[in-house]
Length: 165
Image 1: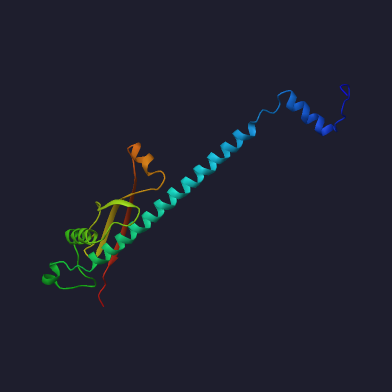
Image 2: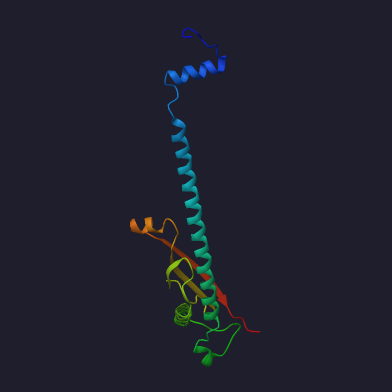
């Protein structure tokens, strides 16, 4: 039966011709690999951004606590001048209280370090302003960032005032 020909439908015949002539050469694997790579990068990026946001919130929480503690620390001039509408504070008292507050607290998860930054003090003698700078540890991309010699630095500011009634 060597001379027998099989009649194919038009769609199948077109497909067979494309395969025989080299029209399709397995490029679907490359497409799937590309899409997988893009999806993996999106997942890694989302995890890193979420981690940075959580680190910022934890740093802001520490700044809030330090500012509240500093707003309650009475300045020595209150003994000489008396109390006004709020507890009197000064730059050095706010800074010292914020540094002591942070020294007593453990570093939050996702933070490599933190410190009291410039701008911490009291602009009006009654409001405590605490600025913190921290370095975030990002999962999955942290090693790459360290290899490049960079890191993610987060700066937050919190204000507190102890009004008297």
